[in-house]
Every structure is written in structure tokens, then in C-alpha cells.
Length: 111
Image (cartoon, rainbow, N blue to C red; front, side, top):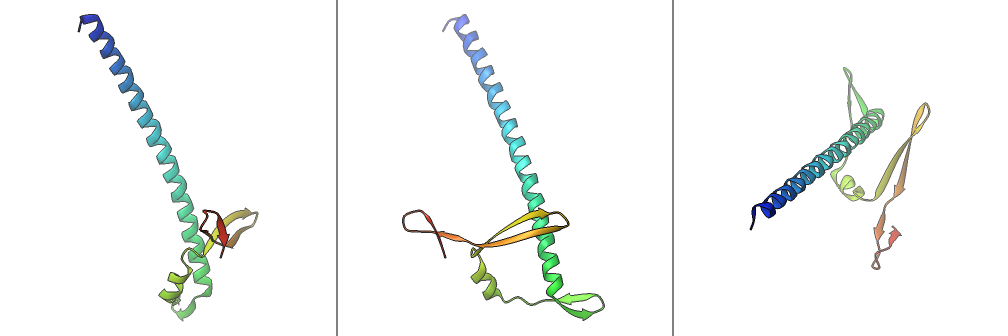
């Protein structure tokens, strides 16, 4: 290979490397944004769960509340419901909908 061809190949390799690094940086930034959004949703769901369970828990005195939830009921409920929370002004509107399971033909059908 002649010297000019080597320089051209080196320049092309540098350009490809710069492109790959820039793509990786954009991809990392996008993933960080998605993670921040997921963390925000997770914080909201934890707060809603805490609020709901604390309201229905039995008071034990000394500022303690307690609730017992059967494991079998939790296992049975997994995947059964979808949940959506929207801002309703002074309130949050939490909507539960029955989850849909895929049918034999790949279409979603209601349970």
C-alpha cells in the first residue's frame, strides 16, 4: 500500500472512530434520560403505594400501622391489572384496567 492510501485509510478510521464515540455518547445520554424518567415514575408509584396501604392499615398505637397481605393474593394479581396515574388538579387520578393477554393469533384479548 502506498503512503497516500495509508493516510486516506487512517483519516477514514479516525472519522469512523469519532462517529462511533459520538453515537455512544448520544446513546448514553438517552439512556440516562430514560433512567431518570423511570426513577421518577418509581418514586411516584412507591409514594402512591405507601399512601394507599397506610390509609387501610390497622393502627397499633404509638404511631404504628400494620397491614397483612397474603402472598397468594399478590401472586394471583401479578399481571392482572394495568395502572395509569394522571394529574387531576388537586388530586391524582389513578385508573386500573384489566391487563390483556395475547391470544393465540398474537392479538390482545381481555381476560
